Amino acid sequence: MHYRHLLVATATLTMVATTLGGCSSKKAQATSDNWNTITKEAKKEGKIASVGMPDTWANWIGTWQDIKANYAITHKDTDMPSAQELQKFKTVKGNNAPDIGDVGLNVAPTAVKQKLLMKYKTKYWDQIPSWAKDKDGYWSAGYQGNIVFITDTKNVKAADAPKSWADLAKGNYKVSIGDVSTAAQAQYSVLAAAYANGGSDKDIKPGLSYFAKLHKNKRLSTVDTTIQNLQKGEIQVAVMWDFNALNYAHQIGAKRYKITVPTDGTVASGYTEIINKNAAHPYAAKLARTYILSDQGQINLAKGFARPIRKNVKLPADVKAQLLPESAYKKVFHVADNAAWNQETLKLGQEWKTTVLGAD
Image 1 (spheres, one colour):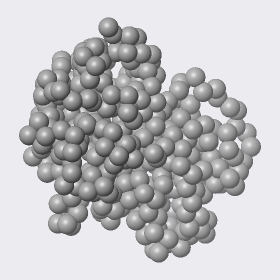
Image 2 (cartoon, rainbow, N blue to C red; image 1 turned 180 degrees about the horizontal axis):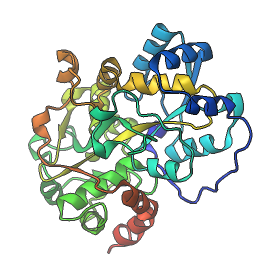
Image 3 (cartoon, one colour; image 1 turned 45 degrees about the vertical axis):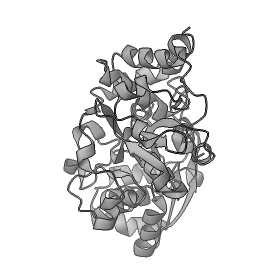
């Protein structure tokens, strides 16, 4: 299981005073974001170190290969969950400091609050929806995902695959959503259920109540939503990001799975590429963020089943065909207040234990 499925989040990470290193980052911050300057200096740096951006997640390898071919910049990644990415940004300085990371959008406000990030908007800033970026330029999402259901038709008849949260509530199969205390995917699953049942990012109770009923009826599975568990047939129906569901189905055998977008409400969110304010290679980080948002960078992500954040990117027909059609996304919600949702996620694990798992 990739660490990318893991969250987040802890506001209790203590701030570490940073007085060492970071000189090159300060220079990069002080320099104009002129593209010619960025490319020239990035080529001089010749390296980029990422965290939480492994080759196989959302086809990151396509982008790293392009950056190497076009700019002679070599790449290395250390895969880790979002909270550890922030800790790395905070504690590792000098030549070993990571340059760029990929975190759940709900984690980004914590990084801003802890003053870990470098501002950089890129030339694509106006093409990124307002819900998917920080107004000051500290972060912006490179790709988005929506919560969907994936049904293993070896375990559940295709005709019984849920098409809505109402269907899911009436089914006779077990439902897996993963660990709500650690997985961003699971947390957004609870949020989607809340939205579909009259709640919001500031009122998660309808989502918790929904899953409490499933638990009470012995329909909530403890099996984690990994590709290995899907392949072994240990999952009947799972709730997850569309790009994970599509990717897993593709790897295992797409005909075995039915993927449906809940018609009574799904939530859209994204993963944001954040630049370390103490990056060892700050220009390469800026170049990478820009490339990720370019047409080819967005196509690379779509090849990995992630939906581009820029709506005006024309995807090749074969790439578009492997995504779910836009018409499937009938009722999509966005988080209205990312800072408020960020705070909710910090206590959601305990609320899950009390309200859902504590339900009779």
